[in-house]
Length: 125
Image (tube, rainbow, N blue to C red; front, side, top):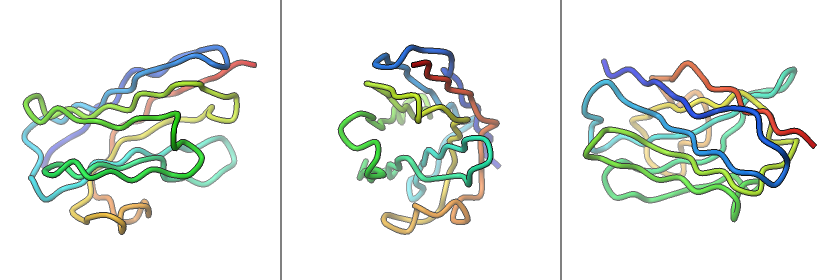
C-alpha cells in the first residue's frame, strides 16, 4: 500500500505563506483523490482541499478558497498545498490523505484510507 509523508509546516506570521508537500512512496492510482485536512487542538478534523489524481479536478473548503491552492505533480507522486495570507485561525496540524472516491464525496475524512503523519502549521498574530 502507498504511504504518504507530508512536510513543509512551520511557524509563520499572519499574512505569510507556507507550501506543504505530500510525497507518496509509489505511484498513486489514477482513480484516487488526494485531500488535505487539518485539525486544531480540541477540534474535529476538517476538510481543506482535494484534487483528483488523474483529471486534476479540485474542491476547496469555503474558508480557504482564494487563499490556498492545491496542486499535484504526477511524475513525482507528490501533492502540494500552497497557503497564502495565513491567519492565526489556520493554526493546526495538516494531514494529506488518499481516497478512492471522487468529488464531491471526498470532504469526509472517513472516505480516506491512507494518511500522512501530519505537519504542524502555526500562524502567529
